[in-house]
Image (cartoon, rainbow, N blue to C red):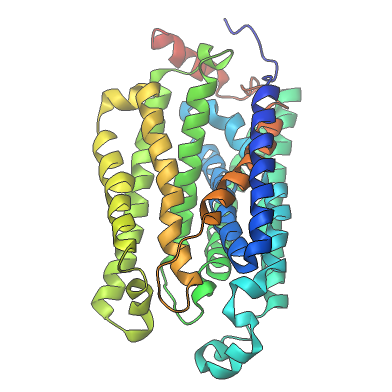
Length: 394
C-alpha cells in the first residue's frame, strides 16, 4: 500500500541549487565587466540548454497524454513541474533582448548596409519583430503548460475524468503548435547568429534535441525520487524499460537529423552553406568526435540491452551521460557563430553560465515539484499502473 500522497520535502535540495545559482551569477557578473559580449554569448548557451528541458518536457507531457501508458504516469509530476518553469524561462529571456547587440550581427546598421544578404533579411531580422515573435513563442508555451497543469490539478481535487479527455484533446493541436514554435524560435535565437547561413532541418534538430534533453533529465529525476516514498511503491522496472526505449528512440532521431543536415550540406557543396562546417573544423573536430561517440554510439549500444534499461542505477548513468553531452553539443553549434574571424576561442564563462542558470532553474523546478503529490491519484490510469507494479513482483 502507498503510505503517503503528500508533496515531497525538497527544501534542502532547493537551498543547494539556489546557492550554486547565486554563486554562478556572481562570477558571471564579474565576467560581464571583463567582457560584455562573452557574457551574453555564455548566457545564450545556458539559456538554450535549460529552456530545452522546460519546453521538451511540454512535448513529452503531450506525447504521454496522446499515447497513455504507465511510463508517462510515473513521470507526470516531474514533467508538469518542469513545464511550470516556463515563467522563469520568460524572465530569463529578457537579458537576451538586452544583449541582442552583442549577439546578433543583424542588429548593427553598418552590417545591414555592407552585407546585401543580411540586409535583404532585415524585414524579418529586426529587433522589434524579433521581440514580438519571442513573445508569441513564449506565450504559446506558457498557455499550453498553464492548461495542462490546471486541468491536472483539478482532476486531482475532483476525480472528474473529463479533465483527462481535455488534456488528450489539447495534446494533438498542442504538439503541432509546439513543433512550429520551437522551429521558429531556434531559427530566431540560434540560427540567426549566422544570418547568412540557413538549414531547412535546423528547427527539427532542436525539437528532437530539446525532447531528448528533457527525457534524460526526467529519467535522472525519477531514478532519484523513486528511492523514497511514494514512488518506490509504484515505479517498476518496466517503467524504466519503457523510458529507456524512448530515450534510445530520441537519441537515434537526434542523430538522424544531425547527420541529415551534414549530409545534405556536404552533398550540395554550396558556398552559402558549407562555411557553417568550415568554421567548425580544427580543434572543434575533437569535440565533434566526442559527441559522436558519447552522445550517439555509446548510448545506442548500451540502450540495446534490455537488462540495462530495466535497471534504474545503470539507466540513470546513460541518462546523465546524454544530459551532459546535450550541453557539450551546444558548444560547436553556438560558439563558432560568435567568432567572426574564424579562430577557435572558448571562454570560462561558457561553462559557468549553464551552471549558474541551472542552479536557478533547478531551484525553481524543485519548488514547483514540492507543491503537488508525486502521484496523480485520480488519474484514470492509476489502477492499471498499480496492477502492473504488483504483477512485476515489486
